[in-house]
Length: 318
Image 1 (cartoon, rainbow, N blue to C red):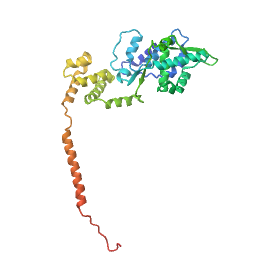
Image 2 (image 1 turned 90 degrees about the vertical axis):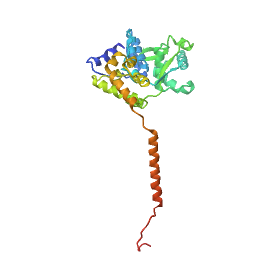
Image 3 (image 1 turned 180 degrees about the horizontal axis):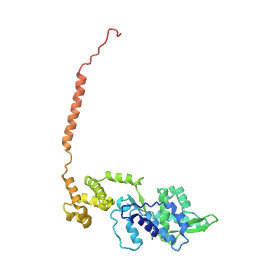
Image 4 (image 1 turned 30 degrees about the horizontal axis):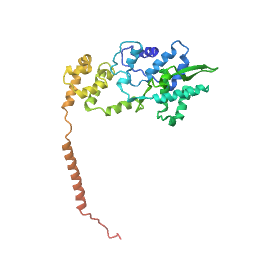
């Protein structure tokens, strides 16, 4: 976590807007652990950043501040978890975790070892018997979660060519088996292929005012030095404004705070007023025009049917 924090901080040294992207896959954890296990706190540091990556709901800034035992601060919609809330469920997988632990215990009694990926392969082959509908990556996520929760642990063995990481029963396995420790997994219900797709799907669900506020925050972010739009208004703040429709600076301040109200309050209230003043289309009139159009088309068809059709032929025709 310390290394990631230091490296990601370089992007903001010039004071301009920047993005930090971290690539993570649960199946890669054993490869990393085999390279750092010999360090004094190598595994613990690795598991801290893995826990950070596995979380799909926790604010990234809060997680970093918590790691360094600093007072928590709101990221103002700057991290991916807050800017694009993930549609994830926290699922109780304690039953499946017990089966995994029992499987490993049986393997150990027979002097057999499994790597994380071999264990996942075995789970995948036994999926029907386990009664699980988890995808492969989610199974990898479960095994890694059990490792960072200390229900399982990694053991390392040197060979002439590499260091292999094997997974064995951990110190807290007994608590899981006895039901004294609950194992939960954050599983996404819908996984989009890219952030743009996620954003576009989200925009489809926005109300009229929320959509206008979304455009406004992009405009304001551009005019204030290219800051992130989420720094102007977070998604939650837009939703609250759309629901409550504040009509004064005082009401708006309760939603977005004093600083943002001073900076953007006038424009936001102006947008709310515009949206409130816009009248929806007259559905009755539209229906009447549509019916009139249908009647006109029907009359034309009827007239065409009544008009005689004359076919002229020459004397040469048989």
